[in-house]
View (cartoon, rainbow, N blue to C red):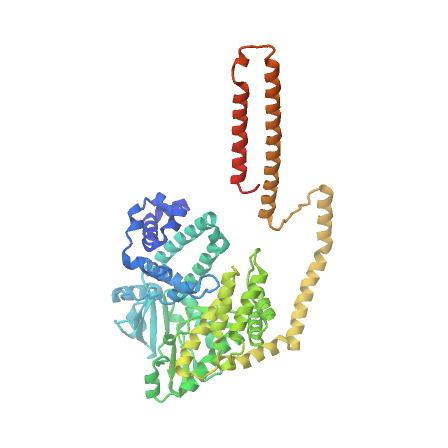
Length: 560
């Protein structure tokens, strides 16, 4: 770790300086980085008035944008986690922009030749020098293959991977420091969150992974003529180059263009929602960023999904828990919602269940009596995730990404057909999931799995009992004692000890004074040099000082 700090010293300085300039220097100070990096103290007071007047969320967004691609991508991933970050921060993170100037055509040709083992002219009959789009990680060019197919080629920005890996090393280091030094960082498991985001970012850097995601989504709709996923040309793709079928359609937020081309907005809206729910509830594998730029409309109301760098995955267990959550919301049942949340998430040891129930009840009352046609499924789910945040309940990242996906798709649909109820479209999928859950074949499969599991437990039981009895005979049994309200216990124990100390000191003071008085009376019959001194007065003064000092210490502790 120390070697990494030395190797990336300048980048550490850049990060800590930007953190400090935007008002988060106190965190760097608590981590001990200001002294280690010799950051000038003037940076604490150099913030201009414009930055000082920004909200916390705005300052977070601005410093992430200033620190570049890694931090922008981390912020965009963080915007999908309302169970980890407060709403004010989430709203600002959703505004993060990563528009950057394109890199040169020479670099593009160099990367293609390096990755695909052939010069651009040998693969493409035509390759556009001007990119269709440029972002912090890569850019897209249109091209035509030698076989005549028109394609879109995504090329990763040169050296971006090494830059991101450096930043991720530093972020892991900072997270580790924070967990050891800051109580809140340990409570929110910051190191785990950074590791989770790092994995997602590394997956996005692998274009072969994006190609596989695209093909997996395409397989879900192979029999649906109204949903189209661009073909991936695997022979012309690698980790840094992705060649896909070029599809020219109309973005779903271009309402006037859609109407001008005769598209039926109601049909488009219904097909988009059905496609997303098919991915989520049936396939358990869904597009994680379905904003209007990633969904196109073709003739005959055909929907095209593009850009599968971010996807979500739901295991059968997670799908069941999510279905239970939605059913609990529809039934206005706090018990069912709490059960679903606790089944989905990781509960802290000190969770306040009565307070959790109160928050869920308040949320239930918020949606009580609201017609399904007026209810936002995405907003309701994210409200529940906000409750999870307040109680430090960690939810799986894919579930919170699902909440973000539902909100995004609702925003798209609202512009196409404001009268469409997302809940009403979701209802048939909910029924299908319930049927699947209670389908005899599925129940039998679960029973079989449990029987196998119980069989393994029973098979290993004699061995476990033998090891247990052997440990008992050797006296190696470990006993763990958990005392609820341990702090209160120690406080009461300290109060008792202080009261006992006070009693002993009072008794000692009385004995000392009695001895001095008796000694003084005897000394009058046998005068010596010692008795010429004011012994009683001195002894009284010393004893009184000790007595008062101990009293002050006890009362100051507040535990008398």
